Image (cartoon, rainbow, N blue to C red; front, side, top):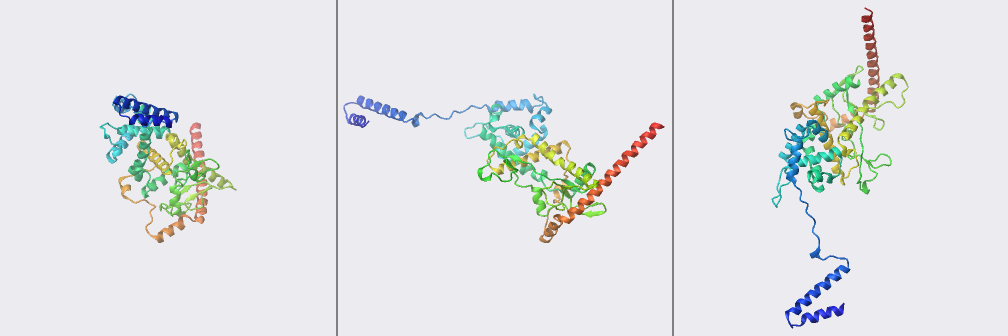
Length: 414
């Protein structure tokens, strides 16, 4: 090799004629190319550029509009709701709010003058991920959207939905809402002063970092409580509970309660079942409490069936993104219930002006309420009064059925 380079150097230094110089330069470049190829390298000149995919975004947007958003669309409203999980009016409302408030969801042109994705395309790809739990690159074939843009749309959509609607659909209940909850649960479950049930759901974290493995898990699997803890339970620990009184078995109580299982403490705001009921009254109460408490587990099941992204293992790397996705799914679920008129409590314009019923303003009141909501004696007294109330109600229902049966028999004899 040294001899060859010496030959090149001596040849290039000679000034016999220009043809000889060109021949020497050609020989030098050929030799360098052979050396690079032997080492398995590629010169900068021959590096292949990334292939640019010509995605016809305009045509795909027209196809999307023709399929779902035209007056004479290919798929009707029922098909739209089946595939988007929300009605078209609610979809248009969310898309309009996102477009009016956030630049990312507006139609923009890049520096080359090429038109970007429309608001419909960005919202559609997000809902496809939330509904079906598909990978980010699955929308490339239908919406011609690359995986990176798809993921960005999903996480920003969830973040902005929380900002726009979180104060309405995740806010603490006002006095009016608490009274509606009392009135709704009493005839359905038979529990006076009941606000609902409390429980948690788990979401498998596929890309859980090694530093976080084992935290917030259940058993030996990798189930991750993405919220870290229940926000409702955190409020109870801080003494935040609605101060709306009610009367059970001739005794007045100040705070509503939630039905809970055995892992929760014996607070005045939690009503647990009897572990080993000794008499018929306690057995009846245990049956009624566990039957009513199953509603929250069914609610989690409905939530996961509607939004499959929280049903399958999460692919995100940051825990904060998982929290945003979970909260956004809850908000969308509550918006659907209100849109369909199936929400137990409804907000009025006056509720938006009123503060929540759980806010504490001064330190003495905070400690006083903390002692009230976490009082174990109140818990046992309330559970005993509820037991008597459930048994009395069961006795009245049986007598009413017997009386109705006797009246029917008498009418038949006549």
